[in-house]
Amino acid sequence: MMLDGKTALVTGGRGGIGRAIVARFLREGARVYAADLTPEGSLATHDDDGSIFVKLDVTKESDAIAAMEQVAENAGQLDILVNAAGIEIEKTIEETTLEEWNLSFAVNVTGTFLTSKHALPLMRKATKGSTASIINFGSYDGFIADPGLAAYCATKGAVHALTKAMACDHGPEGIRVNAICPGYVDTPMLQSFFTGDGSGGGGKTIDQLQQAVRDVHPMRTYGTPDDIANLVNWLASDEARYASGQLWVLDGGLSAQVQQMKL
Amino acid sequence: MRLAGKRALVTGGRQGIGRGIVEAFLREGAAVTTCGRGPRPDNLADSVIWYSLDVTDAEAVAELAHTTDGTDILVNNAGVQVEKTVAESTDADWDAVIGTNCKGVFNLCRAYIPQMSEGGSIINIGSISGTVADPSMALYNASKAFVHGLTRSIAVDHGPRIRCNAICPGWIETGMLEAGFELATDPKAAKRDALARHAMRRFGRPEDIASMAVWLASDEASFATGQLFTMDGGMTAASPLNPGLF
Image (cartoon, rainbow over all chains, first blue to last red):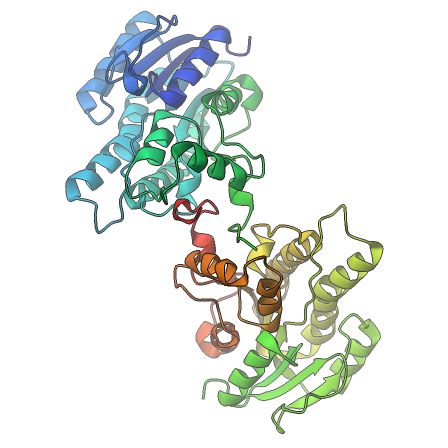
């Protein structure tokens, strides 16, 4: 078990990718706090998986403080923080309202900032004899753009830069900070992207659209939450003790290629 | 005229991007020499000096550099492509692609750097393919990554005397591009699809690359070195997975 004896908190912990991370951490022997708006999260179901639910709206500083107080009382320290909570507004800048723009930044960027800020005192306590690990969620969209995702792309670029800044500032304290940059992963967010209007269905059925998306990947499939959890687990573990400040793209080779012209 | 009084050598000036750069440099007042395999093209401006030169021939390149009376601008544009995967590529393909695209650039840089003037500018033609892969272009993609790496090394080793940058073109309207579309099952649909993947809704033209080359060659770019400048109409800024297009 790679995370035996470690304590972890996962924001968005009842969502698509978050839930897979929580399950993997539990299998690896960690004590896991699954932080989310509701116990059901975006999957709208709830199984007792052995994690401890923490009610957390990542945009609220008081929620972040309360969540860390709960961890402090029960565990006394925090070895692993995963900032997986995120939202996606499927619009160009012209269509995006100021409220939607602010909400995107509040969840994806400010949420990462607030949760990390208030986790740091507990994470410093976890650095005796090993390192503590923060794993942020960037995106391959922080490097290149998908059409009609302007605010999302911008927030993920911000998370990438924040990741490097945090790694710089807190590395000397034994806290590693990395970001995972997923490509297309089978989550409620992706399914909403397929069904949402304006994202380019082109008269195709959802099945046809999904297959077309798979075919553009060198691996001929998009990722599963477990694929992402595999790398999160490694970055959280002591095997990754020298890994910090990096943006880890996990996209089945999608962004290694140029646009796939139909020749 | 932004290049008045400057002496430029552009390799591969017979056609395409190289010819576009030759003509732009002429308009900006430079004295231009260009070269290529075979005889002088009929339609090349009289004021341009032409050498029949194979850039893979190190001795011939060195000889040309010795007879040249100082150079301010070197553009390494000559290049070839072979459309194959690694598994399909032969030793002859390796020699052709690596010989011209890698050793050719190296030959020119090695021969010309010692005699280039203070403030000289080397401009290598890299490619977006050196950063993201075009399918079935394995050796070409790798050769352009070599060009990008060499560009940074020259900038680091030979600054401040010489600046060195690379331009990374995307899809440029050349004979090579048209030939590609003709091979498609539905050339018109293929062209429409490819255009939709460009934010500017057009392909590049040799003069688009030439305008960047003029700027990099000029004294306006005196702080620009060691960088890759992509000119692709926004194509690689977008994901390869463009949901509107399938």
